Each structure stands twice: as C-alpha cells, then as structure tokens.
Length: 445
Image 1 (cartoon, one colour):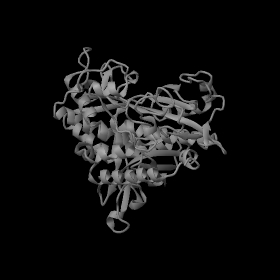
Image 2 (cartoon, one colour):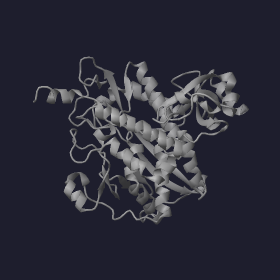
Image 3 (cartoon, one colour):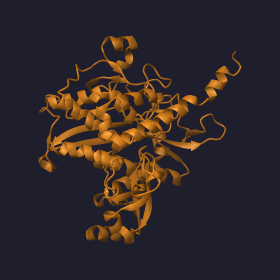
C-alpha cells in the first residue's frame, strides 16, 4: 500500500475517484481526499444503497449501506484530470461481497473459470457518437461535425482529422493509463467512431471499458460536445456495437496456453462447445448485451433504414463471417451481439456462464455458416434452421426470465432487479405516444 501511495503522490494526486458501476453500466462514485486512500482500500467508501439503481437494498437498517471497496491494482492517475486518480470499487454490504454488484457478478464467473485453471481474455471494441445539441430538430441532436455527410462515411479521412484533437487527447489519456490504444476509425454513421485498445483478462477489460467511457465523456464535454454510447441515435444511420473478441487460456503469464487454438487447424472442440453455449443462450444474452429499447432499432431482421447495420440478428457462427452472431477466427471468436449500451461486467459474466454451460453439456454449435446471411430472406433463414434473436426488449426479457443459466450468472438479486427495471422500461416505452404516431394517425380516421 505504501508503494501505491508513493507512486500516486509522485504523480501529484490529491483526490481519488472511488468508482463503481451500476446495473445499467453507468459509472458512479464519489471523490475521496488522497489522505484517505487506506480507508478506501480496506473499509471502502460508503453510499446509500437504495440510491443506487438495481441494488434492491432497503432504506434503513444495516443492509441499507453500500460500500465501494477500492481495488489497489486499478489505481490510475488520470492525465485528462491532473491531480485525480480513479480506483475501481467492488460492492460490499454488511461486510460481505454484494451479490448484486455487477463487478462481483463477473468475479464469480471468473472464479468458476479459475477452478479449471482457465482465464478468459476479451478485447472490447467500443463504437460511439460525437454529437452536438440542435434546437428545433426532431432528434434534438446532430453529429458534432456538420460536414460529416458522406453517403458511406466508413474510414473517412476527411471527417476523422477534424476530430483529431479530441481523439489524440483520448488516445494519450488512455495510453497514460496503460490501455494501449492501437487503432481509431470513422465508422458507418455520421459522427460515429470506434477506438480499439489491447485485450486483457475479462475483469481488467471491463474496468478499461469503463475508464474509456469516463475519459471520452470528460474530453467531449471540454469541447462542448456530447459523447454518446446510445445504440442507434439516428434511424437512417448505422448503430453502435461493442463487439467482444474472446479467447480462453490455460495457466497464467507467458506459460499460458490457448484453449481455443487447435495448432492452426481451426477451433478446438472446447471452443466449439463454448460457442454452442453462447448460441444456445443467445435469446437471454440479448437482454444483457442489448439492454435498452433503442437496442432493437439496431438489432433488426432484414433491411434496416440505414442499410447494412452490421448487427447480426441471426443465431449462427461462421469463419470470419460478420453477418453471423459469432464470427470465428484462428484462436478466438468475435461475439457481435453486444451494443454500446451493454454493461461490460454483466455481459461478460453472462457470456462466461453460457460458454461453460456449452462445455459442461458438450453442445455442438452446428455447421459453420459461410453465406452472407444479410442476403437471405427470413423464410430462407428459417428454412436453414437458423434462429432469430428477440426483436424487442420485452421479448428479450421474457427469454432471460426463463433462462436459469444466464440468470444464475447475475445472481438472484441482480437478475430480479434487472428484469424488474427493464420491464418497467419496456412498459413505459410501449405506452409512450410518439411524434410518428401523431403524424400518422391524428387526422387519419
């Protein structure tokens, strides 16, 4: 602890950001004077439990207090906020790990892997929008760059440089925290970008994703811009995914061996079984990986208003096939279901549980799909026995409620709270009268 204190002090840290993640994947926390570092790492910072979404904690009594206990290994001085350091916290209640803390949920699944001497590595690829508020428009928002108007803006080297200051500051800030950014590009929609940083163990990757969000939010606000991980802010534009590259390893460090790599001959039997579990539980995983009403404007069957959405709704796998839910590669697979609104801890925990179920039950993922699924009609999809993901949040929550494996990954309290909150969200949306409805029906009859 002294070494950590000395290292942070040498970087001029005077304030700690005790940060945890709520059920929605939103960063929460408080500021702690640096002098109280020891207390944050041992007892934790106290919060009112019922004030945090998804805890289900009472308003009074000993279990009403939520403590965020800092993890020393996550302490990082923040280059974009000189004098401040973030420390990731695990949730504790009544002195015990809190079952409804998303990070604790992931820890439990990581522990299941450790019992088999396995570790999961993930590379999470966040897509996001840079927006500006636009009074008088239907959406209320527009791309930050008014000149970003190409019909096909992917990899646009005219718009990308216009945001170079923001992107350079974001890159240097994340690199300063050890994330190792290795590429940035303009994505398929106006004002949309993707930033990739190096893969890591599952828990660290989720921590890094939350740090990315904190950095991007702060740096965008400094420029009067809005950083958004809303899955699909514009109906006629592509949405934002958050794809996971997934690999399994036996052992630790340099001696670790890839479990999914069959010495260059393709994926191993264990890899196929893991993927089969992910496919088998895809409907329930949808609720976790695409957790908002807006997610299903992106995750559509057939042609969307924005053309190719790169958001596969078809439960299939295939070699380097971006039109399938699982894209298989040499020693890993890409899980293409998650969108930018997913809680990285819950999505990863549910993914592990589904994959282990596939291994334990020795499931077979079926034949690899080498066709462009976006070219097929829905009748052709069904004719091949390929299932389709839920097409609404309500349907996805129904699937989650009936999936014991995925619910067990979250735990009883967290799964009940998640289902309850998301049903409320779906009901509120279903009862909302939109501008589209008024324009279509107000004078129609």
